[in-house]
Length: 139
Length: 405
Image (cartoon, rainbow over all chains, first blue to last red; front, side, top):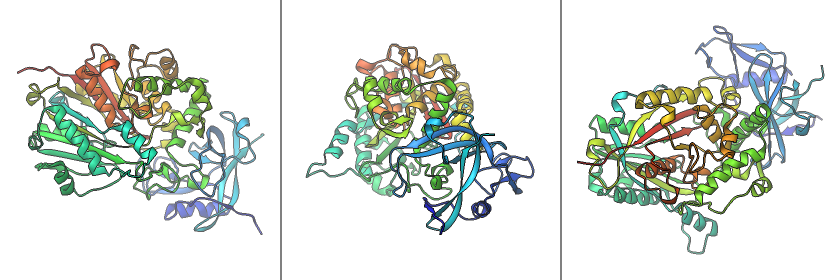
C-alpha cells in the first residue's frame, strides 16, 4: 500500500484536470501558446500573453532554479503541520512554480540552487493524485 | 488603463475636492472586541458606516440633506442600499453600491460630480473584519474567477494567505540585496512611532527592534509586526466640485490625479522579482501627467502597507529611491515626520487601522489641511496615496486647494 500525503484540495475542472492527469504519469507538462510560444501556468483557457486560444500541452524538462522560499509558522490548513516549507522555482522553460522542497532543508536553500521535479503520492477530497515537488539537483 | 477603470484625464484634475472626512474609533473599538465584556455587542457594517458618515458631514459643515450622491464600499457584507440610506438618513439621487477602493472608487466619484450626476457625494466604507472572524488564508477564499488565482491555486502545496505573497517577495529581496529582518523592522518601528502621535490608532506602544525580532513568525521570513492589523471600522469621505468647496470650514483637498496599472500575465514574476515596479511606474506616470505634477512635488506618501515590504515596494517602485535602497531610506529616518518623505504618518494599516487604504486618504486630507497636530508635515502642498494589491497599482495625487469666495 502506498502512503499518500493528505493535502488541501486542488483546483479542478477543464485544463486543470489535464495537468493532474499528466502528473499521474509522473510527467510535468505545461500549456504553451501556439501563437506566441509563451508557456502558461497555472493552466487556463487562453494565453495570458497574447490572448491566443490554441494552447498545447508540452513536456518540460522538470529542471529549474530556486528563486524564493517561505515557511508557514502560522497554521492555515488543519491537515498540514507547521513549520511548513514552500518554494518558488523558475523552470528552465521560464514559468515560476509554487511548490514544496523534497529532502531539502530551508537552511540549505540558496537563490538559484538547481532543482529537479519529482512526484509525491497525495490525496485530497477528490481522490488520489501526484504532486510535483522539487529536490536539489547535484549535476 | 484596464477596461472598466476611470481614465485619467487632465480635464478632471483639481475639479473635485475632498471636503469632509470621518472615521470610527479604531483604537477604542479594537480594545472592546479584544476584551469582549459581558455586554459587548459586535458592530455591524451599517452602524460603522453610519458613525463615519455622521462624523464626515459634521467635519464638512454639511447636513444629510446636502448629500445627493452615495458610493458604498462594504468589504464583506452587502447590505441593501435602501437600508443603508435609511440608516444614514439620506435620499441620494445617484448611488453606486458595489464599489471597492481596491478597484476604483474616488475616480468615478470625480467623474460623477464633474458630469453633474450629483453635487455632493459621500463615499462610505465599512468592514466588520474582526467581528465576523475573517481569516486571510486557508480555505477561506472564493471560487475561481472571484479572487486572484494566487489566493487559492497553490493550496495543494500548502501555500496560501496574503502573508505568503509578501514572504516570497521579501525572501527574494533578501537574496538580491542582502537585507536583514532587522532592516525590515525599521518600517514597522517607523509607523509605530507615527501612531504614537495618533490618539485614534490601535497600536501606539513603542516598538523596539528586540520586540520585532522576538515576535512570532507568521510566514517566515515575516514576523507578526510585518503584517497589517485586522479590525472593525468605517470611513467616510465627502467630495464635491471644487468651485462649491471653497467656502466650507476647511481648506479643500483637491483630487489632482490618478493612475492604474495591473499585471496581466506572469503574476509571480512581477510580484516576487519585479515587486510590481513596472506597474507602479506606469500608474505613477498616468497620475503625474493628469495632475501636471512631478514626483519631486510629493512631500508626503500614504502607501498601502498590507506588509512592511509592500510599503518599500511602493517607495522604490514609484521612484522615490532606487530599487534596493528603500530599507536604508527608512532606517536613516527619511520616512519620519522630518525626513525627505514622511510616510504613513497616522500609523498606516500596520499600526493605525486596517481600513483597506481609506484611513490613508483621511490622513492625507488632514495633512493637506495642515490639521494633523503633533504629526503635521510642515508646509505640505502635495500628498500621494497609493493603493497596491499583490497585482495592481492605483496612485492618487491630492493637493491643498485654496479657501475663499
